[in-house]
Amino acid sequence: MATHRILVVDDNRDLAENVAEILEDAGFAVDVFEDPFVALEKLVPGAYAVALLDIKMPGMDGIELYKALKKRDPALPAIAMTAYAQDDRIRAAVDEGVIAVMPKPLDVTRLLRKLGSVVEGEKALVIEDDVDLAQNLVEILTERGFSVRAAHSCAEARRLGSSLQDLSVLLVDCRLPDGDGLELVDELCRGTECTAVIFSGFLRALPASAMKGCGNLHFFEKPLDIARLIATLRPAK
Image (cartoon, rainbow, N blue to C red; front, side):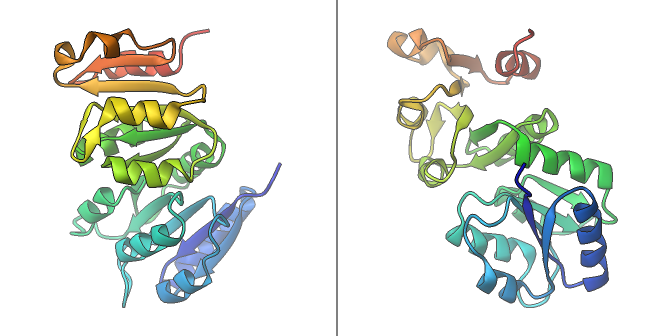
C-alpha cells in the first residue's frame, strides 16, 4: 500500500515535530514547515493527501495559507489546528472548507480516525451554499469513513470535481447561488456510477422529470433526515 504524505505547517517547531512523530508511527510520511511561505513555495500539487495547518502563525495564518495552497492544488483537503477555543478565525476556516478544526493539544485518536477517512474512504463531494450545513455534512460523513470535500457554489464544485478521481458520492443543494443543482449533478455524474443526493427545501416544486431520476439518484427534503441519508449512502447488507 502506498504511503500517504501529510503536510504539517506550524510555527511551533516542537509541537509540529511531535505531531509528525505520531503520524510517522501511524505509517504516514510527513513534511514539516515552520514558515507558511516556505511551505507554499515548496508545494508540489498532488504530493499530499492532507494538510494540517495551524491557524495562528505570523505573516500568513493557516486560513490564508490554505486559500493559497488550494489555488495550486484544488483538491487538497485540510485540517486546521488551534490552541485558542475562542479563535476568531475558526469561522473563516469553516468557510474555507476545512474538514475539521481541532483544538490543541490534539486528540490523537480522533485525528488518526479523520486522516484514515481522508486517505482511505470513498470520495464524497458536498455542494451547499449554507456553510454551516455543508460543514455539518462533512463532519458526519467523515466520521462514517468517507473522504469528503465541500464546495459552496457550482464554480467551486467544478474546480474540485475536475481534481477528484473516482468520486463515489455527490450531495448537492438543488438551488445554488450560481446555478442549478440538478444540472450540476448531471454534469458531474455523467458516465460514472456515482450515487447522487439532491436536497431541497421545496421538493414538491421540482419538475416531475427530475423526480424520476435513476437508480443512483435520490431526493431529500430539508431539513435533512440524517439517519435516512446515511442509510441511503451505506445501505444495510
